[in-house]
Amino acid sequence: MRVTNGIKRLVHGVLPRAFVNLVWNLGSDARDVLLGRRKAGRPQPWRVWHNVGGGDFHATGRHFRDLFAEAVNFQPGFHVLDLGCGAGRLAFPLAESLDETGRYTGFDLSDRALGFARKHVTSRARIEFVRAQVESREYAASGQKASGYVFPAEDNSVDAALAISLFSHLLPEDAAHYLAETGRVLKPGGRVFLTGFLVEAEQKEGIGNPDHFLPMRPFADGVWAADPRHPERAIGFDRALFDQWVKAAGLVWAAPVVAGFWSRTGGAGDFQDAIVLEKPR
Image (cartoon, rainbow, N blue to C red; front, side, top):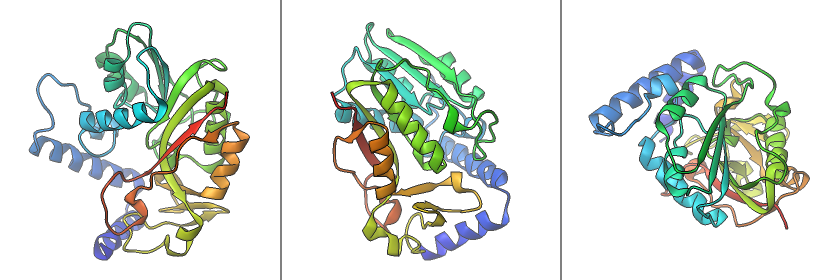
């Protein structure tokens, strides 16, 4: 693990970020082909074009759909808001789970990803994909700062929200704002299921351990990054700081954090921490 992480740090330290992303996505697409993940009749985006993350696109979507459904007490008639929906990894399985009274709204900053989702995701429910014109160095997107973006939903109109691998790419002011917007749009009693990197007090001393799956370094007060030069690649927040944002957003913790293996040298489960918050009634 130490050797592997050393190679990763060298690559990220020497090569341009855009080039690293391109090579990683090309390799992931090639691996999908070799493993038979690109099956006929099942639409699946090419990572080199859509940057959809690792693992089997549809299997990963179903996995997080199941975690989300359990966390928020999902009902087929829910209005679901998907923060950073990408090419529809969660939209595909959620479209199957919602009935004709349900509604799904997903937003993302990538026109290409949204185009794929609009073309392939179908459902009995009302499905809508919205372009969020916000800037991001990690995804080469331009627009307004994410800290000023208004979610495409009315106050108290959303039954449940989810954000898979979004907060791990948000700068601190953006993360705080997205939590506040989540608190605004959720109905009283509504929940949000999200993943990210939370740094507990007891983790701080060893967070830079080169044997960990994702060693991090200080970026700002209460904020950590895998690469401080490109913090949006992978960014984590002190639990105490995140708690402040949760409270300011009018949310409360609905369940204990399920720790991911990002800050360990081994183990099973999901890579990122799983977080469930609720808007009190």
